[in-house]
Image 1 (cartoon, rainbow, N blue to C red):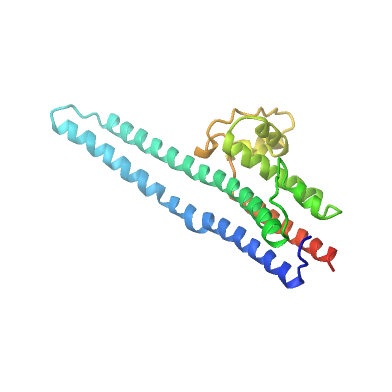
Image 2 (cartoon, helix red, strand yellow):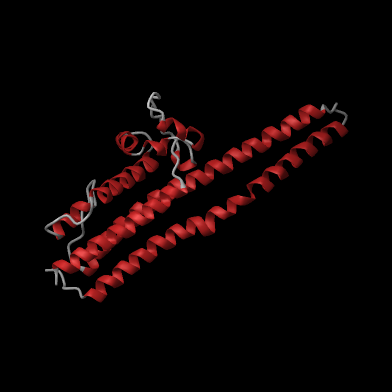
Length: 236
């Protein structure tokens, strides 16, 4: 049998898990992503270095074509710029994976350490464990579909193309389109074909945005609040 938990204990875990989720997201938005703001200065430095290298070759007796020197500098900077932007996108993609698996770990820890249950086997759906604990489902349809989207997203980021990617495309096609492509979702005459998912951990082919991360944060915090509230009501 699971231990009976007082209201203050349930509130303690609600706040604990909320803090963990919030701090994880804040680590991305406040500590990590701002480091990419220097990318323009880095690109300018690469341009100068490439341009000066061409000048040095000219001083060694080679003829200097100013346009060629500019082209070399531009190509070097664009390559660096693209790589940095891909890395930033990859970081955002990766944090969606981290959020989902943090949630899974929280659920497992709560059931094993707090409710004294046996270790859970989630299978494809963490909610199966909760449905065994409470007789009636407590989450809304929107919350359940949100968790399913986040689960599919985590699998897609980790494994690339596959069954999860196909299901995710049906549930959230905007995740497969870059910002400049988003307007096609509002055009019913355009058929959007899911691209192959190659290396989402390097920021390619899948585009988790900060709005998505914030949406998943609110989702997980709301899920915990709903579950613990129902758990408390069932034990009162």
